[in-house]
Image 1: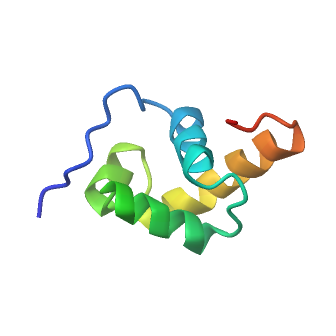
Image 2: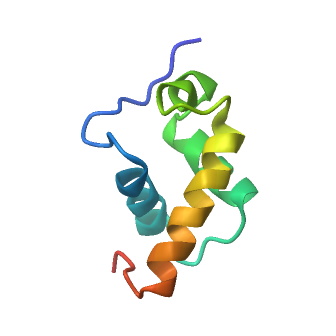
Image 3: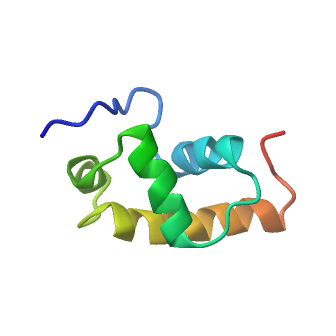
Length: 77
């Protein structure tokens, strides 16, 4: 099944992490991030375009980026 998610301006993990934070700046855990990715239409096919085996591996990496932004106080709001 083709993804409805278009990469567009989200060519890097930073941009995708900021999108996740705009949806929920208090997000915790990669499984919750994976749920947001799924809601956005990011499936395993899209995750592979980012270089990850599936959306869960992508979510694990995004969790690190989200934590980094949070530690620096760089939240979207």
